[in-house]
Each structure stands twice: as structure tokens, then as C-alpha cells.
Image (cartoon, rainbow over all chains, first blue to last red; front, top):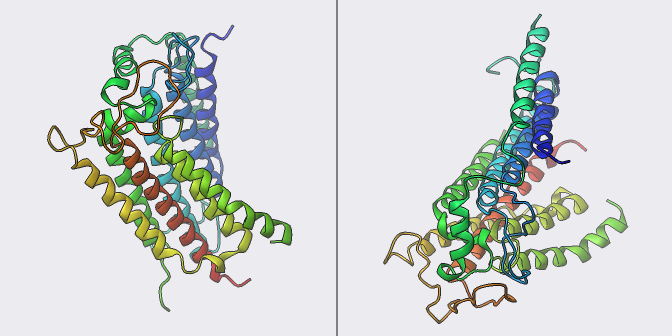
Length: 115
Length: 88
Length: 149
């Protein structure tokens, strides 16, 4: 049956992002790895609020006498997604400026602090 | 040498995450839901909105939305400061 | 870009903006709201930037910045409306007038005239997100536009 499989799948997403963050040298791939970690955490937050046999918590055209899913994790995930967007925009701006100045996208070659 | 240490640390973190993720509360039966049941029952009388998630984001927890608007504003200011064109 | 992409982009940009406005407007009745509708409407700016290249968004940095400022100021001013109780109280709900009718409990087809200050807050946040994302995309497009091509 289903068991706890959705939680384990979210953890697999976080682990894939962590692997891309640790073992790759291209700067854009590191940014993609951080984005994968954020996506896995957001999916995990929404999955904790599921009630078996529930519908979306909206009263417009709802079937009568239905149990609803918990709405609070969905409201907090909205804030988390917008904060992830702000972080990604700043990281990509840094990558563009590094490429303009050093002419390279390798993470092991940009180790000086000034210049 | 550094790669083997990183690989060992990554495997330890992977084991902890997978083991902890599959031993959570059973999927589909959350245990602490007193606040969400209050939101589901009383949000149509107090807020007069059909959408419970929007009522939580803008009325019951409006301060979090104010903080999030500030974070978005700060991110745009940061990007505009980094990507400016200096006169040479 | 080729002729096909440019023609389809000219047709699709008003449709995307209207759909974003629809998602923002019905935020208290259907899934959606301020943040989601603003993100949908900002994808029209991305479509213009991809289809027509960097010189087509040259004069658009200050309109998007003004739009974001107006949205943020309107959001804080709407918080001061319900200052009789607390800072963010929803004092227009169920009191008649603009957006004031009460809602019958239980499942119902949605009525647009309900939910107090919620639709006004949806518009403020929608303009703020559209202005912010549009300004970020225009900044990225204008920075990389002076490479030797």
C-alpha cells in the first residue's frame, strides 16, 4: 500500500539536490542543486497536511458534508516559495557578475577574494 | 582524501533523512489539527470568504504576508544593486 | 527569433495578462490569490523578453519600479483601515457597502461582493509581485544586452 512513501520521495528529492550541491563544479549546477533542495522541502510541507479522503479547503461548489484537508501548511508554503524565489534571483545575479569579470564558470577557480 | 570524507558525510546524512522520513506519522492521519478545524469551521462567518487558504494568508496570519512582501522588496533592491552598469 | 514565435507572442501577451488579472480578482472564491496571479502575469514579460530580444524592454525599468512601490504602500495603508480593533483587522466584512455582504455557510456558488478587505489586498500584492518580477527580468535582460553579439 502507500504507507509513508510520499515522505520518502520528498527526502529523495532533497538528497538529489544535496548531491548536486556537493559533487559538481559548475556554478549553475550548484544553483540548480540548491533549488532542488527548496522544492523538496516545500513538497514535504504540503504533504504533511493530508487527511485521507479529503477535498481542497474551498467552499465554492463543494460537495455537501465532505472532510477538508488542513489549510495551514499550504498557507505557510506560499511564503516559503516566495522566499526561495528571492534567494535564487540573488544567486543568479552573482553568477552573472562572476562570469562577466573572471570569464569562467568553474567553482574551483574563483578562490580569490578581491580583484 | 577530501572527496572520500565528503562522500562519507553525504551517506550519513542520506541514511538519517531516509530513515527519519519513513518513520513519521502515518500519511493521511495528522494528529494535531485543532487549529485547522477551527479555521475550517469559522472562517466563513468571521472573514466572509469561501477560500480558507486566502483567509489564513491575509487575515488570520497577515503579519507573515507583510514580512514576505518586505523580503520580495529587499530581493529586488539587491538585484538592482548588483546588476548596475558603471560608467567607464 | 523567427516569424512564427514573434507572431504568436504578439497574440498571446494580452491573453496572459487577462488570465493573470482573473486569477488575482477571484482570489477569495477559487484557488489563487495575489501571489499566484502576479507570477502568472509576470510570465508575459518573460515571453516578450525571449521573443523580441533585449532592446524591446529598454524603457521599462521605471514603470515596473513605480508599480511595485504603489503595491507595497497600498498594502500597508490597507492594514491601517481596521485600526479600531488591531492592525490588520478585517473590518469591512459583513458590514454592507463595498465588498461587504456576508456569505451563506456551507457549499455555495461564489459571490464576488464578499470578504471585506481581502480583494483589495489581493490587488495590492498582485501589483507588487508583478512589478518586482518584471523589474528583475528587465535588469537581467539589460545587463547581458551589451555583450558583443
